[in-house]
Image 1: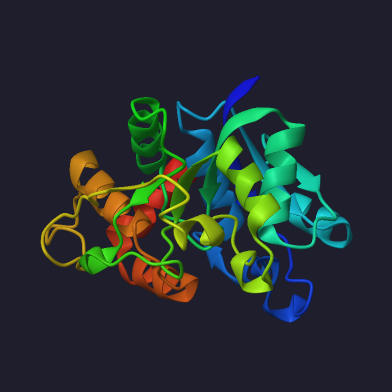
Image 2: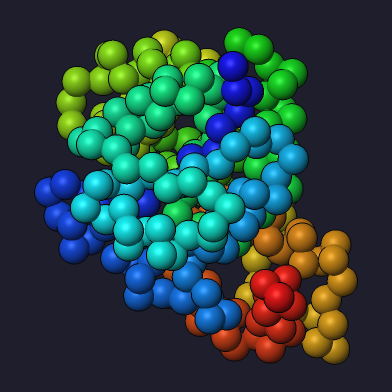
Length: 246
């Protein structure tokens, strides 16, 4: 049985395909590459994910395959909502746990993923684990860009979530029921009290500074266009990304 599976959901919304994540990916590029590629690259660099897959619908399969790196498998699923997709995928690939890597978080890196997986290893009873959202508020609506969830919790949620509003995310049902699921939130590391969209004044950023900024950004939900605009304004950051992509 596979230990931890990374899942990136690039499926269109069945009721409104025009607002689907894959449409956003097609429109947004970072350092000349699709946003999906950056998300996948971060997942593949993780040392705690046994495998990473991208989910989409049969009708968008070839489109998403054209955006994803060749090293990752793109799986077509007919499941109609995110919770069903994740439960079905974890079951079919025999995963013990899943890391939900949001497609709209291109700065999520391997360190953010690995820290969650390491924390989960020491908490056998935990169903769901993620970073504490900004300002410490937690709710069913509050999501972060990386979430660890046990396969058993996905199965329970898939069976018990009946309202459509509980199934719009693979984890929303369990996040809204802390009395039924064991939820754990890690304090999010931040490089200071506020995140500034800037690199060191001399234009040189060492690896520790870059990783701290990337990890902090990984714990927040930024609009992709904001991230792209930020990096395009920052020559040092853009050059670093281009160097990593080479």
